[in-house]
Image (cartoon, one colour):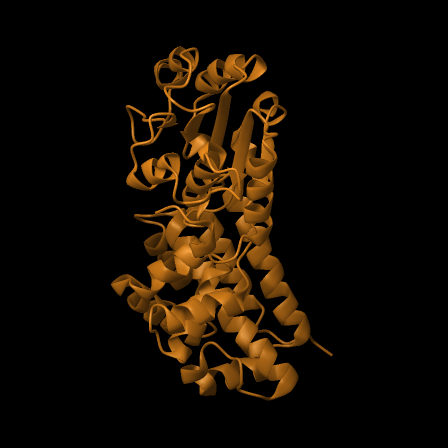
Length: 337
């Protein structure tokens, strides 16, 4: 069932989508932008449901035939584009799944809604094919796209769409959902919330992942002894981290580093244990807080920011890991008087 009220957070988008549906004044193309597991697809389907709702009152009503068809997944005038390949959307997908179909009027509704998930997978040729439709769309057509990266879209496509950014869900809402809906203990909900960074879907994935605890143990073991490890050992660690999943593993490690040193900085500033994510490692957190200066903490967070920028620029993941681990190790050196 596609229900705006069941979505946690996203109040700005829900309000905007409902207002568009209720006013009857809509654009021909929308682009929902957010990271993986942030609820983009659910939002797209809720929006389509609201646009197609037949109620004279607030949309979606959830009771008309159109709403029931959406919830059942068989609305004849809401088409989700299917791709022949898992990792890309080609020109043939756009031509056959959208361009050739969009000229056919709606089956029973006033509108015909197309949903393109993971629009960042569209090839340049596919986007250019879509552009032709965006330039002169039928009056009844609405195209809703979702993407993890607006930068992956051609500027000419972006200029013809209404961009709807998905904002992070407040931590307290995620924590409350994990505790009351998923029945996760508060201390574990704190950990998953911290690592999710405003993404409820990611928080739920972490809560049900058997690999997360293993990754956490490995990261903590690395961070506990990083000042004692020789540089060649760090190079080996960087190679191991990026051997299989490459940037995914490194991104996960960066999250561990960020929260580990965030805890140490908080303790250094307050001498309080409340609010720390790695509370079970408090003795090590205290040790780190004493060994690193405020300038050292600033350098660590700068190194993390630089590493994220390098990954976005497609710099080799092992190179990024090398530089990051060395920067973290060197930041333990107190500045000379």
